[in-house]
Length: 465
Image 1 (cartoon, rainbow, N blue to C red):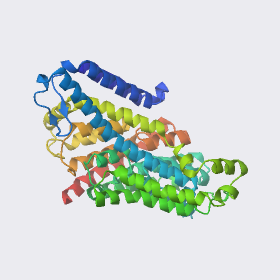
Image 2: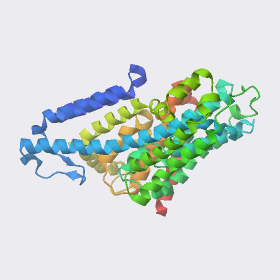
Image 3: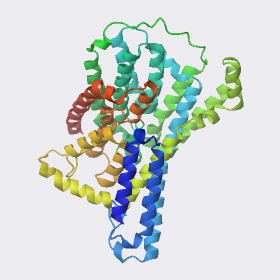
Image 4: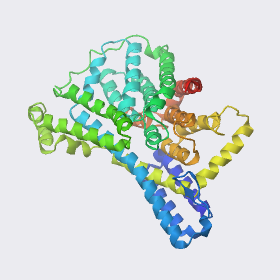
């Protein structure tokens, strides 16, 4: 039965990886994989020789002697435990996504466009890279990429030049998301799972992540495509934006940044702070929307839409529910493998075989740097969410062990090496119709250099703590 469960997981994983070839949304195989894995566990409960205790991070003693009723009760408790841990992540993401949509409702991100005051291509490259690095740490790398490419489309008219800018934005956004607990789904998973703390995460990864962004940007600034000036005069005049745009941008970003502070002060789970932040932002949004803003500053059709639905209702209708369902499916499917002790045994195999490959430097007890670097490379090929979810079940080092920070860095930045390797890359691919092989030829080598430079920098920063 274990073999059947592993086979279902591998097939589901393959379907997720080949999402673009199969033309099936990845949430579908994720949900099917989750349901079938747990169904097989329920049907074959009597035949399993071991069970993994997630609370104590060890295999349960005497599981084979349990009665059928005791095993069934244990499975239900385990399923509820994993659902609770997964729900913490999903509710947190729902809150963050809604705040971002509220900011967008007021056209708050248009304020960022005012930062671009130059026509020089290299300066614009650095402006967008730094904005992507900073913004992704606050509003997550996916949203930062969407915002900046939308602005880029209004500033850079030459599509060939714009593709290069988009490629560097992907690298910078993924680098920025790695050092912040709210910057990337995988880092958020490690933070909520109590594997990393905000202070140590920033301390370990800020320099490596910055170098992962800065080195490719520096090299790219010498490429012929970034020589000379842009013709920005042709940009069309934008329609008048809400007078609350800048205010809602700062309130929204401030509310998201407040969440880690709230957690440090109260020691409550992060989703509680995110719900408080959402409530505060929603209050300001409702107050501002009841002014003449929704009645006079937009065209008739938009005024009617805004008047019939408040900003919170409108924003909730726009959040990425398919992504939420995908995370539910993949995290619960990985939980199925963890519960049977499959991931625990696989981790033991890795620890025994990797030292034989001549890798003596290691992060954590028995877990080599090579394992984590390979995880980073793998995240460029397959989704990094299940990779990190699997690492949570495989490795059992304590909170703030350097292993977890290296996993956060590798999984977060390794995806930049292929355009399909990260959510930021996939959304940029859709917005700009970037060809897979164009990215592989023009941008991947820059991402690889940045990834390796950052990894070396991490090996230095980890000695400081």
